[in-house]
Length: 369
Image 1 (cartoon, rainbow, N blue to C red):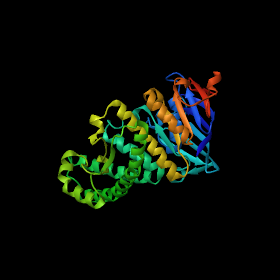
Image 2 (cartoon, helix red, strand yellow):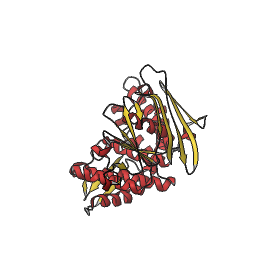
Image 3 (cartoon, rainbow, N blue to C red):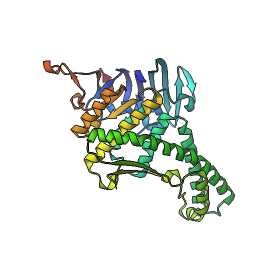
Image 4 (cartoon, rainbow, N blue to C red):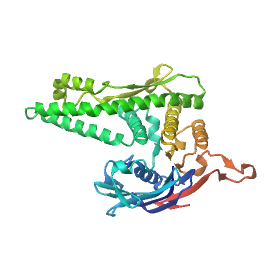
């Protein structure tokens, strides 16, 4: 799958942008603060209907503009489609081939994988960041997962609100019974899908880690589910009701799960060196791309946000060696093209033509190729 043409209007500082995309490597270069990451954010939103940086739609619209629009002509398995997303404060609307589309019908048009500098903190960050990594991978492979996750979050929010109100008024125990049952039912699919994705990714992460390090170091990923299934969760919710009423929050469920990462039998977050952590995150991203390529039948679109400046030279070279082997379309932001270690053609004659690459310069929200 790939983006053929990409347009953004009044998205953050991108007043009017048009990209005639290369099917392999698209390098977006320019000084910091010019709008390079905004372009990746727009592409990410096109595929997921979510921003990876902002919670509110109004933050994505250019100052003084009433709305913003993103559109792209995409190709997947030989079929071309036009995807469009319009943003107004507090609202998003999606269209496919000029017709309005619900989220369930829209997803799957283009699948994107993001690799940003913040991802390098994944092993040492909060458990929520590792859960988010799993959820993004599941969503890319199974768009229906979004509705399942949103249902769980909606019920959890309602239950927590009821628990908090119990400190002011007598608790509505019959309504709490209803929320307990609904939350337990909603938890089941999330637990099963997360366990499955960890099982599928683990051997791929292990192989990729050994490939990029050649250290012979054991690596293990373990999904630590707080409850095993919906039935267990319902029993736990009832057993912990007194505790939850005192805390004003739900103590158990998938929202507390953990992805444990061990290197050589020890927790990576506590004992791994910075070099080991970078190699680990690189291996996890490579594994995700390989998994999605197999599941989807074609590689996802990869968005790399200034990763070359964060990875050490060895890991950066290993990443791009992998990308040269996997035929996924890639969008890369950098302050200078020379920081992107792609193979060069004609280097012996002094030419600096990057292989399978198109360069775009980004200045003040405007793009030139």
